[in-house]
Image 1 (tube, rainbow, N blue to C red):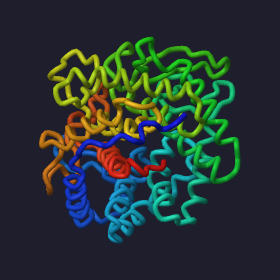
Image 2 (cartoon, helix red, strand yellow):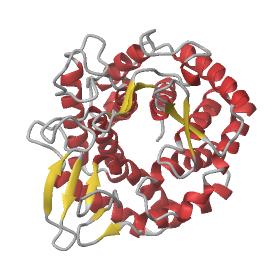
Image 3 (tube, rainbow, N blue to C red):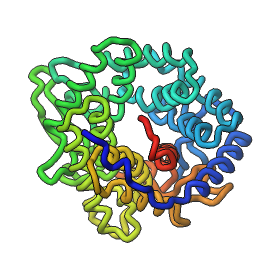
Length: 380
């Protein structure tokens, strides 16, 4: 498919405002919290900083943000900081009890390899990809997401975000098994993930013996019949990457349909920043999720490259970025525990991380800024 939309001219976004803030916030953070084995995640209910060790699924986002800041500014200090915070995650390369190795390793070591060609990162990444591949079950034809809860074989929409890591591993190693696992997982997901209106289920639970889907539900959304907004953003991003890596038109169509549903909901909102669930019963008083907007914005920039002439996705990405960069969502320097964005929601049903800064919101905002700035020559 011709990338007709390459001719689009991006609308203005306040990129320099975000970059300046990121430099101020991250410099202040590193000076105050120099322990590179602890990773910023969010804010505790008492207002204090919430950090994790390297085994948390969110550990890769802060070093990933540092890598983007290095790539954007070309300043050695950010490369050195990125290297330091990336190093502490290496121990996760042998972990087989989590599907989140893409978030953990590919956002840290993967960005490091992409931006510096440090070949030492390649072997670490390949070992992690092998660990991730052990979670694939050929009977279900999908990668298992969780080893906890009352599920039989849960596959969550977030898991789509790990497939890019496996596609990279296939190319880097020459081992087609990684590619085959990613495609098999995608095809299983595609079969069951979306409703007729192209909203998504969060969790698909399969029978591990027969591979039949037992239930379609949510863990982090409002109800099994509702659409958790961050899950929908993961879907847009995941299927866009799937099309990039396979050129299978089914994935492109699903990415567009998921995006169109997302945008149909955010178009109802004055500033376009999603509520944590699109069917939350207390809208317009429901908490927002800036992370959902940031993920979607980054995904829409790439999707606009593949969606043909005169598509709306690039301008919609700019709309989301500009809202995120407003005073309502973008923090002041020195505030917000040194995170960039305010007003994200992690897991409202679990009463966890509600209306707080969350590290992955910042990561995808910086990724979106980098993609937008380099739109004309962007190579994924």
